[in-house]
Length: 292
Image (cartoon, rainbow, N blue to C red):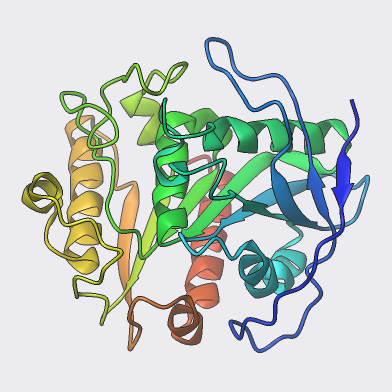
């Protein structure tokens, strides 16, 4: 089975000082994990990095605007400097309507399995190494942290930026509110202990405290998590660290504010997003080196 090579057209989104060519996208099909199903056709993505050179992978996930080219443009120089293979998937609206929640039954194709398929094919092609770093903005932050909860053995570290709401480390609540297995997400059996071993950084602008039209404001979410993104980010990090402490572990999640940023990817970039992620990845690498 071979990759589909699709010509990409760059979008001129002003999200980074550097003007960079996102490069070519590659889509792939592969076998899905046992007990689950995957799409018959490949996931479109921008993939940036040398061919036939195995590198750790940075997956950068778009929000509900689905501007994957903007993610590739923002993160390409970062990935190259750190020696990472950059993958910016495009979860198309007509196929992955529910990508933020991984793609529950009846809501389109499974976004998590499509990404796994793509990464497996990149590994087979000799491009992708074993370490996977995830960063997602807004709806992409929802996808990134839920992917890490569902597939923790695959994830080295995760960064959620301005996510609207979260899946809590609560095995009594059904997914996507908690980590109780759901028939709408076949093949996933949440392992809280493994999920708590994945280092998590949660970033949100200090002005991202309003109820904009894209924010979920159901009574269920507000009661559990708070009324805006800043409160919800704090609540999720606190819940993850409490769960870790109850099991004798150190803190696994960190919350940081981006000064002057509202709910805007460009404002998050201007507020020092890349520098925060860079420092976090350095700490993750250092902890691995000390065996922590």
